[in-house]
Image (cartoon, rainbow, N blue to C red; front, side, top):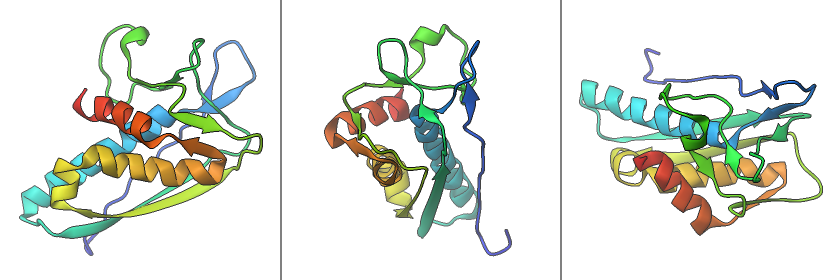
Length: 157
C-alpha cells in the first residue's frame, strides 16, 4: 500500500484424502511466516529501508484438527515452496515440540516487532515466537527449544 503496509492471506484448510476430515498444518503456517518475512526484507532492500516494522498474524481453525503424519510428526499439507521430491522428504516438526491440551481453541492472533537485523539474522526465533503466540490460545503448549530447532531446519533447510 502507499503507506508501506504489505499483507498476505491464505487458506490452510486441507481435506484428508478419502475422508470427510479437514485439518490445518502448523508446518505450512511456519513456512508462510518465513516466506512473508523474507519477501518483506527483499522489498525493504529494494527501497533502501532498514528500519523496523510490526508483523501481525491471525489464525482461525474452527473444527479443524492439526495435521500429523502416521508417526505423529506435524507435516505440511501444501508444498508452499513447490519443491519437487517425495513427500517423505518434506519438512516436518517433531511430535514432542507441540503438545495439545484436552480443550482446543478455534482462533488466535500474534504480533511481533521486526527489524531488518531480526528478519535476516534471527528469523528462526521470530518465527518460533509467532508460532508460540498462535498455538497457545488454540490449546497447545510449545516446547521452545524443540520447536526452535525444527523451525531452524525450515529456515535453513
